[in-house]
Length: 336
Image (tube, rainbow, N blue to C red):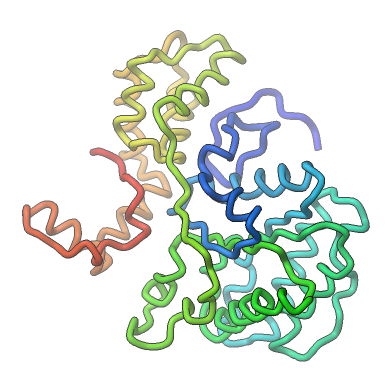
């Protein structure tokens, strides 16, 4: 793959340090390393386009490079269409895991077995992880990205196997030392998000071993300044302090919007010279008028009944119960 001519602000997919301006993952992941060091299973969630995949990929690489852990992040998204086909879900997940391992550049002794052991449907995923951990000379840490794209009995089955492996470790079963479920929602909201009846059986019941639920953090004003300074160092184009403050004020540090504003100014608008608050405001208006994909998706969410109740209460000045606020709305939205 050829090297890019220059880095730029990323507005689509995970960040690549060779191509994109990006920040270290650690400040956005407070408490994550500590839970991993305690061999905990836990949940990490964040709304769409907040840099979750970028952060967990970078953390997995860092942990592996430190020498004691074999950490791997892989996406569950390809298996989302097999909601009640457990065998197909297990096959797709294990294929995705192996593909991610092959691309990680890890040495042969740390890679999962090829082929995976043959087991009956419903047990294959757990047995495969156990066989990998039995062979691997390091503690295995697994990040299951997009886990909440799974639904139905397949999701329940996968979570049940992880819980069984977690509980059997004290009896000597080889199994990942730490598992991180990564998605858009807290585990408690999986059933609500998929349209289920909250009074019925919840996926959280199948994973009652999780130690904590952490939300990926947004950028601080200082982190925005650090990100934008990378552009300044490479191009000599400055974001004035007032411009950085205005960027923080508008989306309150939401990572995609922070990048989208900078991309619109430097690329879409082709601004030359120092960047001012007025140009930040112009970029905001342009993004709104263009109905950028992620803003349009947010607009569509406003019509969901649970979200509409919250927005209506805010607009009318009435009171609403805090529990009606969905976890995916905890991220600040654009100030329009």
